[in-house]
Image (cartoon, rainbow, N blue to C red):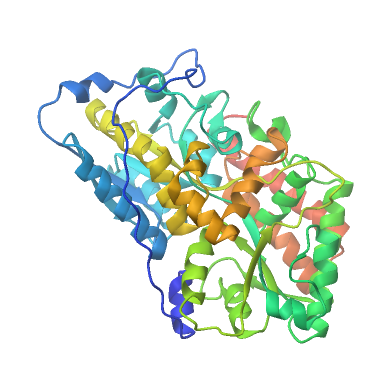
Length: 471
């Protein structure tokens, strides 16, 4: 169930924002240094498209629904109308998991897209299918500069020095809170919590005044708190200097994170809900109903949330948006990016690959990224997008949309903050989630839960690597 549908069931009406006009060049070279370098990469034959007579039709599988899907459709329509070489047909799935499962099936039945949007946690698994043309190949062929990209999102989809995909729908966890609930609890709504200890204290105050905190059971948060303390999640520099073979998160820092989360939940100051399924948005719905005074969720939901609130369905909510409460203000790290990258298939003809590159580079041009960010809550991954009229107006009128951008553009850029690259990443996150739930529901100590999580993660990674004969 997507967010707008959940809100609709709660009596909310969603109005979709239309994208603004989009402009881009198709194959034009960009100034600046050429992106990356690779010793031996497959070719990207851009000249095949330049010489082709007629229209090349390609399909793009994506996972965008509701407001996000409408904005993607608007940008794609603008692309189709902007030139006569390439026509893109969108094929949308209900979720990232659905897209990945359909893609895996396509590796067997041959029904594959020309280009596809895949969730961040599928990066290594996508590489392991050996079914993608690295976008680095097309970057090199087009002399495409990446100097205008935010460093951290670009680095997330760069593995062993090769840009495997372009960052497209990039998000970060942010704090959503009800300023009215903060005032009722005696808290200053202009000073939301900036650290995990402050968040715990505010959750206690909110609970005492009749609300509390909604906490999604999302293991991504553990990784983000580790990154905020500049600590790795897996070995080999988070899988960036070699394939990840084990977890490295049994540390004093991680123990503190687990201990704080356990205290938060076991005390009743926070109530959990799953990150998927029919209850996945209970934390956000709880803000509307007054059950919760604050929660952490993806910035990708900001567009839908603000649209719904704008209809006056929840008059007792004055939305506040703030940065993810980091582990400690005295430790310098950064917020790792989330979201998805866009890939080019190696299983389609060269002319389709070239057409896919034209489309994907259009999705990531500055104005497209500005339109995308304004309509969804995802961040613009291009620095120059932040200077467009679209974004300057948005950030002036609704500064909450700038929070995630500042997170991803601030702090250190290194292996710890770029995020992990793990083959069985989805299963690894389930291992961590199981450990968290063992604390909350079975009384397992944070120390034992953390050790159990790393043991399970090591086994999961080892099994995966052995199956592939790697690592």
